[in-house]
Image (cartoon, rainbow, N blue to C red; front, side, top):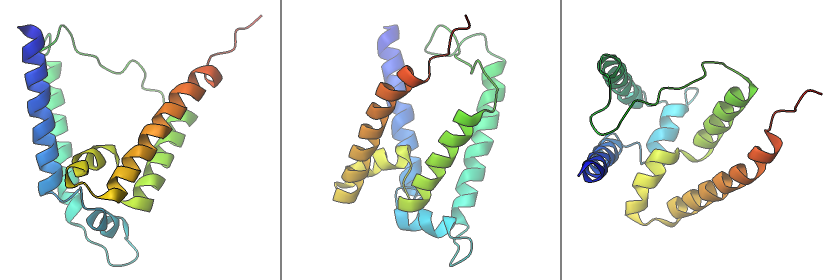
Length: 148
């Protein structure tokens, strides 16, 4: 029963997240690109979406940190590292450049798949290829060198 509860909670959370992306128009690349175009025809409306998301995140984390365990799992999985390193900065920069070029990031792109539009499908396919390439390349190149 616990597994079913976990799956149902995940499904509900995913549906709520997808609905929020749709209502906020985060699945519309033109809207996102207009938000990112601060030097041109800037549309600040997505800043309110981000502020709302930040509020929910801060509130949710405050509640979670007071609990001993999540509702549908044995324990919380908090980040182990708080280090800001080159990999983190490089990944954030790559994410931002990709978002700025096409107006999609992974969550909204997956939600936009429901529309069946070929540019979205192409973006998601490229995203999957990139994730596969990362999982193939990085574990090999990212292993720490053993001191001798």
